[in-house]
Figure (tube, rainbow, N blue to C red):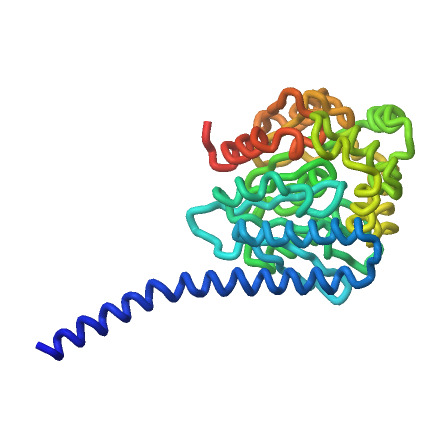
Length: 348
């Protein structure tokens, strides 16, 4: 009898340990990630003396912690001895979740641009969120500044991470990259979501939009002053919010943290985009494509959404979100997340 009792007690202890061990690992993993993030923050602030810049740097570190709390972790991929890509990827990839790649535009790195979307989309997808070259921690010493080269680097990085098939969601500049990824790698890209992107514009349309901005477009895309950044925010964000009234001193801090690094290269990317000749024979994608636009977009007018749809044909469709500007991911993230989820998962 005593032996049987001891065996039962031992069995209960083993069961308890088996249940407690994963929880303990998760707790330790979270605290370790927190310590690493805080350490990285402390190291990163050493070159800075401006207290506002320190505050923005702290906010950037907190964004990293937020992404970790959503089940993502940072991953650096060395493509070769000259090119490095930084990704945020799902910690544990579940077979019942499809993969979704999220490509950002100009306006900071991927953390800042997708802050309103990661929490929601991570519940339905295994996320892969790269920093495009010269944004965040991604960079290259090669001279290429084209969207095609960006697309090749993202695709190669995804292959190294084991992503075999995925949908791509893209915003603005990221839409150009997504378009060429879908064209060059149809065996990888299943579906495409293009949001507020001028791909397919004619030369005349491009000149018209650049003239309408009424300022140096390069300075808006890569702002150097609080004035330029405020113009960019007012041009792209339609709805009122904190970004509209934040003091100039905080805008300066944001520029120091997100725009100063690789500024020359960012300008070269933008210059190529603005000055290259439009592709008259734009390839037609084979994938199903969802085109999403804000009805108040002052950067790319709504008619460009329907123009792109006509170019792509019956495999594409357009969704217009009301009372929304160019930055759909900032103005209407809930509606945008719902459209992306239903399209990629095949819901009606």
